[in-house]
Amino acid sequence: MPTPNIAVTMLILLSTCAAIADPIADPAVSADVPSFSVGSASGPQGRTWREIARLPDWSGAWGLDDQSFAKVVATSDGPAEIPPFTPAYVKKHRDNVADRHRGDVGGNNSANCLPDGMPNIMSVPFAFEFLFTPGRVTIIPENNEVRRIYTDGRSHNPDPDLSFEGDSIGYWDHNTLVVDTIALNPRAELFVGVKVTKHTHVIERIFRKDRSTLQIDTTVIDGIMFTRPYQYTRTYKFAPTGMMQVFCTENNRDTNNKVDLTPPPLDE
Image (cartoon, rainbow, N blue to C red; front, side, top):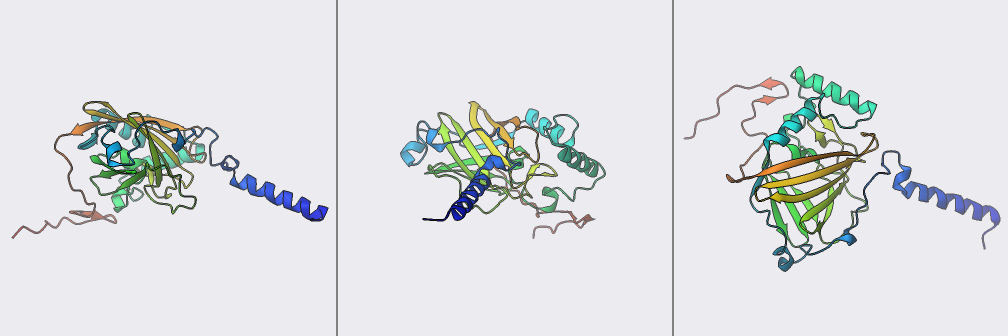
């Protein structure tokens, strides 16, 4: 049996470990994080081909509509549609807008052929398509970034590597796919030029609003970036022309602020 001093020490250590493990103890994590439980899933979850056949049909290509694109521009250029930023991020956003208006786009991922990352990849003017396979929904945009959303009932990886698309798990709530994404690389973008943090937590509700419209309701939680959860909606139209192939480096004429106007070689 441990002596009283050792017992007290053990209790202090256990209490400290509990505080570290509690995400609310981290000031970067908001207490307003919506609950997310794969166990609350209802209906078919697409774990088998038979279940996939009972899921909504989202086949084809989908692209941001004009109204949502206008909102994206208003948010990234300011001052309209500004998220509930903390003072530090108000300044980051203001500086980013000023840089872009001067023609300095060096801090933008797309200008440097980096992935947009989450959540910005769902607000850029690329079409994307859904691929349903057992236990997973894959979102493939035209610029070749790939999002993998696991719907097989797993929890988040307890020790994930940070990535531009993050660690995503989801479940089907009737005709809505609910997606929870964490473990984002701090170089991923919230929107053009404004980066996320390693604490950024994204929750999406994706559903087909009508025959030709897909809607995504997004909540972004990050106690460093926002004074409260940032919520927004984007709508997408069915693209009958399908997907195009987009490579950042193909026919790129502006690299590291050096413009090359040499004509591309003619096909022989």
